[in-house]
Amino acid sequence: MAQITTTDANEFSSSAEFIPMRGFSNCHLQTMLPRLFRRQVKFTPYWQRLELPDGDFVDLAWSENPAQAQHKPRLVVFHGLEGSLNSPYAHGLVEAAQKRGWLGVVMHFRGCSGEPNRMHRIYHSGETEDASWFLRWLQREFGHAPTAAVGYSLGGNMLACLLAKEGNDLPVDAAVIVSAPFMLEACSYHMEKAFPAFISVTC
Image 1 (cartoon, rainbow, N blue to C red):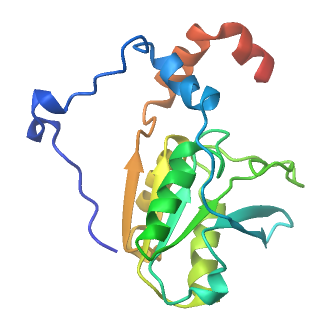
Image 2: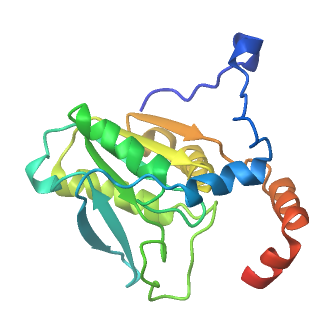
């Protein structure tokens, strides 16, 4: 795997700063907006259920039948909190990969594909076992091919933990982490402060 590197924020000019759409400066509204105006999945996903060693499962949404695309470079997407293939960032990235000749796949965390998981165990930002097992299964099942992993938000936090734990032993050639909540306590407090009633009900 390539060496993990970080980007110095000073390399970017002020012109690269994020400017929200007029009328949508609130960060929570920006989060909810894609839910209200959701882009539809523009490809027909190939679904596969992967049985896990502990008797549970995760569902995989491929850009095409992986058995017929073993030779293609692979892009693995780990979604954010309660995300799925239906999340615009997830299916948008898989679609972009497909158009460039890659095999894309979204690994749904336990309980996120529309069906409750079997075991009394859920995913969280530090739970790396399922992703680690999946990546090794991917190489074992379909052979070696260039593999990149992308994690969004909570999935990015999980991927960062996984890279820190396994480093070069992890069967990926590149990794990208997008908008990961590294300061989990502060993020939790911010969400609870913004939506106290909602957080208390869901938790």
